[in-house]
Image 1: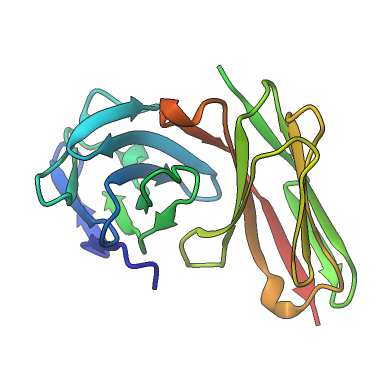
Image 2: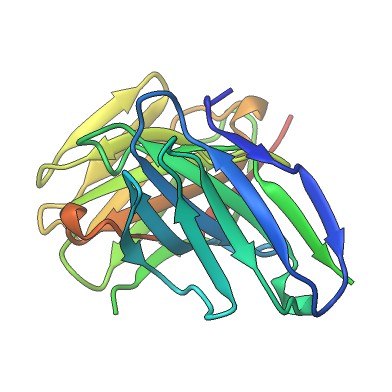
Length: 113
Length: 112
């Protein structure tokens, strides 16, 4: 158990819908990262937040957005869903000053039908 | 943009054989991390390398960072069935930029 929690574990929805994935970082970690992992694919970095502010952006689609709240939990919003958005979405957090040391949550498996 | 290539994509070994995966970056890296993801699981942080030429060991695992800080390797001695999974490297060009690039991973299967 990494200490990072993600909900829900599984999500099945239809094309065109909108979903919200939630992540709570490890206690004391200020940074939250979001990644997408498609079947048999590597990890694609989406976005990072640090203490409530966006810090870095990766290959995140315009249909996707995220935010980090004052209590440091983060949400990833995916809208106008397409079949190709089906994937595992991981959240990770890192200790202050150790950005490379990321602790991943169990992931949310999104299936778009 | 920065690219991190990892080879091989798949490796099948007999239990007891050694295994090595290589990570190559198109640009000089500030540091590099290695992660292991078991089937159905999430990536687990293994180690971070920062210095040019650095070598670190964790039991049967040996991690190396190249002198030019553009490549890295993970070597497992005498593999066990518990070593199965996908090993990812992640390279940072600039830690302050807050963005790392993951390799596509090497999936290791071990035949008992």
